[in-house]
Each structure stands twice: as C-alpha cells, then as structure tokens.
Amino acid sequence: MALYPTEQWLAAYKDRLDDSEALDEAGAGWGVDFNGDIYFVITDIPVSETTLGDLPDEAMAGLPDELRDQLADIPLDAANELIDEEVRAELPEKSRDLLRQLDEHIVDGTVYAFIGLKDGGCEKVAVVEDPAERDVGFRLRGTHETWSALVDGDREPIPATMSGDLEVEGDMGKILQYSDATALLGEIAAEVETTHLFERADQ
Image 1: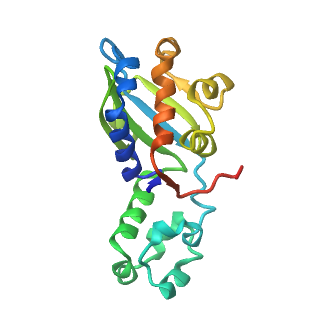
Image 2: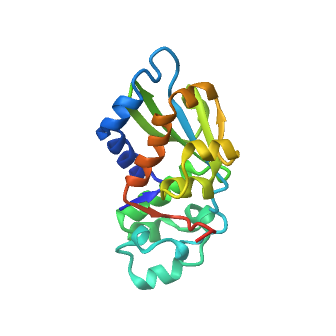
C-alpha cells in the first residue's frame, strides 16, 4: 500500500489516472484551450501533533524495536532536527525517505500536490515545496480531513465543493462542465491502495 500523502502515493494515483478509460472519455478536451493543471492543496495536516510512534507500522517497517521505542515520542515536525546522522544511518531507506518528504513537502501544515491534466490524461504529478513553482489553472483546497475522506471514497469532489469543504480557485464553470471527470478524480483516488500517515479524527 502507498503511504498518503507521499510522492509514492501520488505516483500510484497517476498510474490509475493514466489507466482510466472513463477519464479518457470524460476528460476529453480538458486543458486543451485552457490551463487544466491542478493543485490539490491539503491543509491542516497534524504534523506537529503527530509523533513517530503514531505513524502506521508500514511507515517504519524494518526499524529495530529498541530504536523505534527511542524515537516514538519525537514530533514529526521536529524529527529531522532531533534525529542525528548516526541514528539516521540506522533507519531503513524507506524511513529516511519518508522523513525527507515530511520535512520538504509539508510547509506550515500544508501539502501542494501538482496534477498535470490534459485531454483526459495525466501528464505529470509532483509534490512541490513552493506553489509558485508551477503555473496551474485550478486549486482545490481542503483540510486533511476532507482530503482523507475523498481518498477513502467517503466524500465526492462535486458535493464537497458545493458544501464549501473543498474550495475551488479557478473557473468553477469548467469544473461543472467537466463534472464527470471531476468526480472521477475522486473515484480513482479511492482505488489507490492507501495507508494514511495521519489518522482521520472522524474515525
């Protein structure tokens, strides 16, 4: 399973988008004569309230129990500062990479996930540190709780925008015109085999 929200999860999501014949049809024309690239903006990620010991087992798989116990109480937002190079060298590669991503990609509790969409296909995805790195036509902004519910298939994008839980920056008319494609972005996300790094408060 892919850890969410990470580079690996986003890559798995891209593969699903690319494989979707339904998206090929529903998204035909999207981004052809306008900028169809999107930022998924995930806010209020509880990185300061979460410790290494709170992470799912998969996140620290292969870590010796003694070392796991030593690191358990370290908050994620302080992990890269508090874990020295000697200890870091003992971590499995996957754990070191996860700490790098948490440090680089979560800025002020927010992740910016770039989704490059055009004519029913997904050309590129990336997690970026600075949203100014990419020129996008749309931003879909919601809290960690809202996005986690979408990823789990418990919420749908269009109703979430209508309720205000998912804020749209961009041409809402295009979102509604391509409502089937927008809905598929949520449905396909729910198809990715996912392990959440951060628990949902409603579960």
